[in-house]
Length: 77
Image 1 (tube, rainbow, N blue to C red):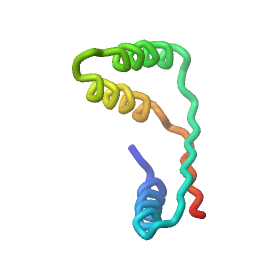
Image 2: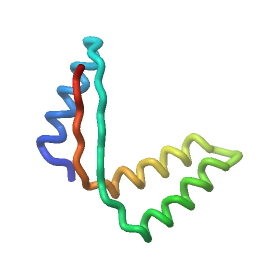
Image 3: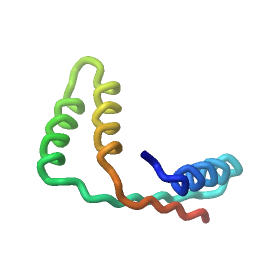
């Protein structure tokens, strides 16, 4: 579940991007080593897939995004 602050930041960031401001977003989180090892294999298999590579990479990215619970900061320059 995303916090209200996340959604406010997301909306503000999108509006700054639309008007052409440079935006740098940085996120940090802690991933348990066992989850990371499993995800790393999933990502490798997706990145080397011959069929549906793009879809598999998106699914792998979604897995790691859902596991992320850290902080997210955007700088508008």
